[in-house]
Length: 142
Image (cartoon, rainbow, N blue to C red; front, side):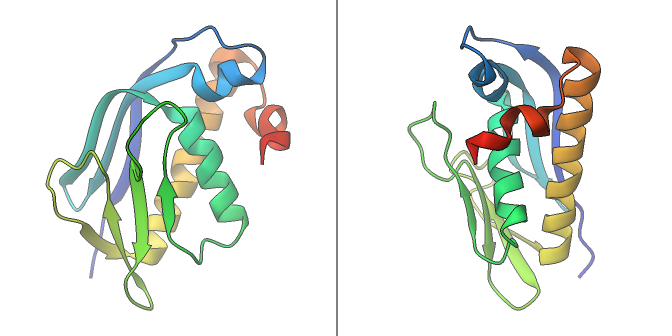
């Protein structure tokens, strides 16, 4: 089953006035999209991209063998981004804020690769714009 899983962000900006590393974690908002096979699962104009990055990194570092359910510190809804294993090599991508209302299926490896790409993109943006190594700055928050 060919798949295209994308976690993308655009127009990131500092939005809050949190102290220290929490400014990095919660104070960067961006237009965020989660897309699977051309279907938009989630489309949010002001999303905390670093907080999602931090939880994805922790999940990947633990082996990514369990379901991933991201709930933001700043949102009431649980499961803003969900990756659920539904077969040996297949996963579902879903969101409490889903545009389609139906989980989208994708190869588990494509989901994992998209998560790595997202983390890398956030880290690269942060390094170029804020001149901070995000991984080092947030390593004690895991």
